[in-house]
Amino acid sequence: MKNHDAHSGDTAQQDPVRLSFYATPEHQCSYLEDKQAITLFADPSAELDNHTYSTLSQYGFRRSGKHVYRPSCVTCSACVPIRIPTARFTRSRSQKRVWRANQDIEASLLGAEFREEQHALYNKYIQSRHPDGGMNDPDPDKYIEFLTSDWSVTRFIEFRLDSKLVAVAVLDLLEDGISAVYTFFDPELKQRSLGTLGILWSIEFARESGREWLYLGYLIKDCPKMSYKMQFQPQQSFIQGHWVSD
View 1 (cartoon, helix red, strand yellow):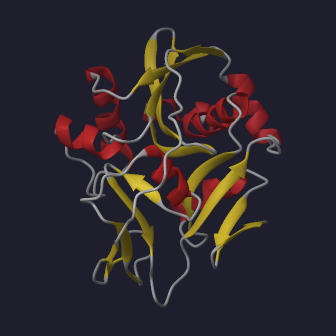
View 2 (cartoon, rainbow, N blue to C red):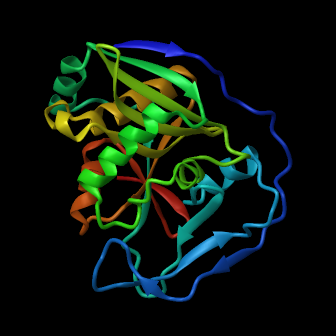
């Protein structure tokens, strides 16, 4: 696979800012129908930076737009943060097939800004995969607010087949790793397993750039939509305040 790196991405380390955290009232869980959820947010008015965000990622936090959050449910611990040790990751047989089958796809690393072609692909993906998931708003401002923030080091990886955009992986470049924010792709190319390709490419990029981890967000073993994350081994889970190897 051909790679084009248009940007580099580390920032100088700084002392972390002091943060307050706020818990939401109980609300319907987005992943388990019979569960109520509580979400813990870092103070949205705080002046965050990439160093603080990198530190919070080590404690299981994620980013959505400018908001940094973590599940904090009292009676449920189904949402488990996971990360892949990039140096020890080994592709499975099926992942090797996906990698080989997509060698005709070209990947390019781009800055985080609005591009009409990417937005059109995102809308196509959402309408096909998540039409009732609350994300099917075609407004360009809400799209870019969801994927980026003004303090994170975010990159958009474009995957092109014969010059046609077929997938985009949105990554945050952390100090110790990479956080996979979101991936969307052409639903008509299901046979190419482009979601898997995006993760495999991200692991390779993290490894080549000297980053130890690929943070994959939350794994919920009872949620079919999350089951694909279990296919990337080995991995670590954040359990009771510690990263534990599976």
